[in-house]
Structure formats: structure tokens, C-alpha cells
Length: 90
Image 1 (cartoon, helix red, strand yellow):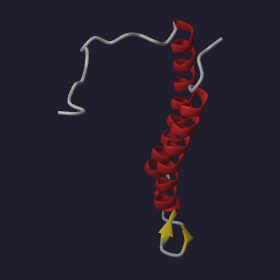
Image 2 (cartoon, one colour):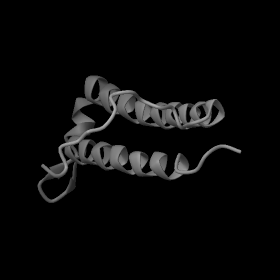
Image 3 (cartoon, one colour):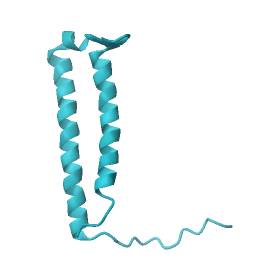
């Protein structure tokens, strides 16, 4: 049957150590950025719950808007990571 031959089970590393190290640095920096935004969200919810009840748009409070912004931020950072890691290190 066509398309069922998966080939060899062995994996061949095609990325240099320099490229892998650079991609790891990018990933850690972007993770730190997201982590800081998430920690701020958790701390605001824990210590300023009244602030998170503030209505920022019709039917949306700050907690909901911030939570949605975290989801959008995660997607955006994934796109940035993909862009930064698309070429090999020189």
C-alpha cells in the first residue's frame, strides 16, 4: 500500500550543536517572558482579587481579558520562536 512505508527507525541528527544551543537560548528567553506574565496574573488573582473583577469591556472582567491575553501571548511567542529558529546558526 502506498504511504505505509515509514522507513528506518533510526534518527539522524541534522542540527549542529551551535544551532541547538542558540535555539535553546531563544526558547529559555521566551519562556522567561511568558513565565513573568503568568506569575503576574497569578499574583494579581491571589492578592488583588477585587482588581481582577474590574470590567474592561462589556461582559469581560480583567481576569478574563488577562487570561485570554496569556493564550494569545503563548501563540505569539510560539510564532516568534519558530521564526527565530528557522535558520542554522553560523
